Image 1 (cartoon, one colour):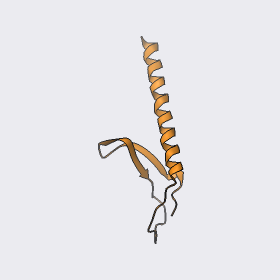
Image 2 (cartoon, helix red, strand yellow):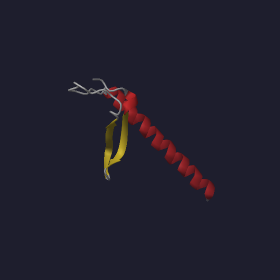
Image 3 (spheres, one colour):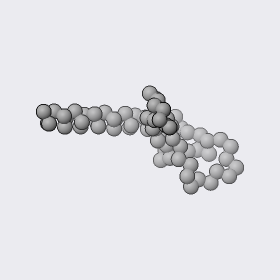
Length: 72
C-alpha cells in the first residue's frame, strides 16, 4: 500500500524525545488495512515534507526576529 503525502508529517519530538532529523508520523486513521502487509512511502514525498518544514521553521524564526527588533 502506498501512503499518500497528505498522510505524512515530520514531528520534532515523540513521547518527549527529540530527534535532530525528526519523527515520521504516518496517519493510518480511516484506512482499510485489512490484508496490508507492507507500507510504501515515496522518499521524494518525505524529502519535500522535510524541506517545507524547514522553510516554515526559517519563516517563523525570521518573523520572531523581526518582532524582537520592532519591540526594541
